[in-house]
Amino acid sequence: MKMLPQGIYSISKIEQEYAADTQVTKLVSLLGYLLSLINPNVTPKDGKNVGFGERVNANRHLFTNVPDIFFAIGVRNCIVHPENCEKPHTEAEIKRAAKHLRNAIYEIRDHYRIPAGVKRDVFQTAAPRAAAPNYQTPRSPSYPATKQAKPLNVRPKPKPVVARSARWLLSLRPRHPGRWVAVLVVGALLSVYGKTIWQFGQDKFFGTRPDATIRRKEADAAIKRLQQFDKQQGFAAKVAEAQAAWREAEIAFHQQRFKDAEQGYQRVSQIRDELVVRQNDRDEAQKLLAEIQSNRADARKAQAPLVAPQLWREAEQASLAARTALTKGNFAEARQLALKAKQKYEEATVSVSKIPSWR
Image (cartoon, rainbow, N blue to C red; front, side, top):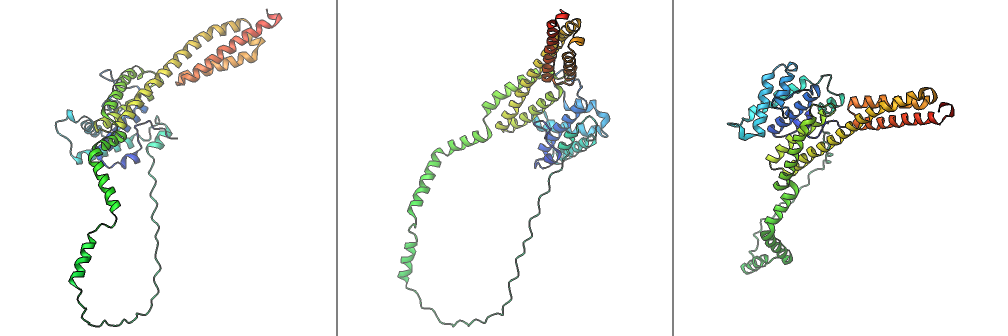
């Protein structure tokens, strides 16, 4: 099962990219994702999103040559935001930046905080291509050469000039007039509607700027709202995934790949909605766990551990499991377990009240 978020690619897939600038942008995103797993508690200086340089600076003890990594990040920033650079980098500098980034990624590949599944997906090797079958044609049997008769040097009879001219005129006549008519009709239609058809195809496969701009505004608002989840427990991984999707969408937007940009912006908005649901589950679980204390006290006061030990034990187990799930960030599971514990405590209290000797 693939564990990498959208916009994060493996080393083998990045190395298959033809353009060196695309490799640099994807390698920087991969390095930032791995550093977010190693040290998610990095505080941004400007109070907004955590930059790549800040993550590298916070984990500089993991690398042997930090200046080379900052050089590569600077090359990536010039590729993504060329308007902020005085002059573009050369092809050799871009390739050198990609080499520094690969070295940095391999330096942290064995870190214990990176999950094993992520290591497998990031550093997997590309499957080798199958060799083409070596077919050998059998050698033809050797037959003795046959002797051919020598041609007679007979002077050919000249053809009449009138016959040759008539055949030349007949060759100018079209053999399939229906096909020529179809070709002319198609050519006329393309000359009239060719531009419209081309524009439709371009919009269908690459998207349009107005639609991508609308999605971009929605994603920008979602990114700003995601800042409140950045430092909360159980939300850091999703926030990093949204930031990576935003960066990939911005690159696609500036490269006029508007359909890819729309998909990236939609992913950012989707992650925002998922985090809002997770936040609601967390708040509901915390509320239920607070209410459980009152139900537990009532059940204990009614001697439920002695009269209804099975219900009491199930309630205690559900309550403990709910607190564990809440600590691990499984908020939906914590809410369900807390609700189950609340119901079990109430059932235990009611079952005690139904016994005559305990009324």
